[in-house]
Length: 240
Image 1 (cartoon, helix red, strand yellow):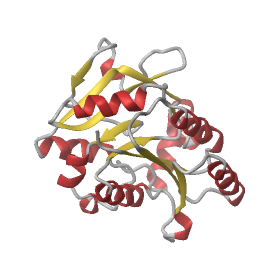
Image 2: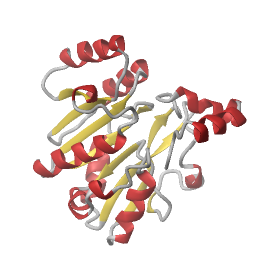
Image 3: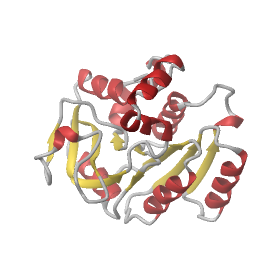
Image 4: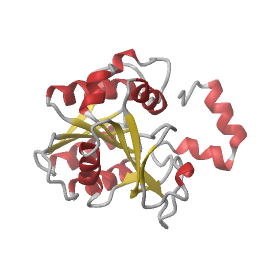
């Protein structure tokens, strides 16, 4: 079984990040793993909180403060993907992304790793997202009716909780991604299929997703859509 490199990018959503991290660290993982939180220009107070949290959790977790690496303003998801791809390839590891508004179950991460390993053509293995009541929610509304299944999907896999296999990492260089964009799950999902891989949605491995908890301004999409789209286009936010 290949080792796992697990990552969580974060900017300032410290409470939800710590909940995410606690769930990951308490998971039933038999596979060798290392967990990295990428801190994308959180405030000094929040950075200090993250540093204290990580320091208390032992050797399997580390914190990367992007402010020490780049002056490029947040979001720096592209840099995170490029750094984590390189590290995973060097370690001959799969890369597992868990975003800071997601809470995994104890068996989620090992089951994703096992499921990907059982499918030689797998590029991405994604866990379906659900709300606190267990109903499939954004961004996997298209999976409603497939609860309990694992199946190949043609639509893109979100990176809420997704494993990118080592084979995919070696086949597609993230340095070719468009630097004008902010998020890359659509592009990488498409490129995985273009390179002959299959992407699988594990609707039998639900994870709790509280959409946009890590980016509160995006809640405006539901409460004040006019303001949301005004911010999105005038400030150039959220390019997919």
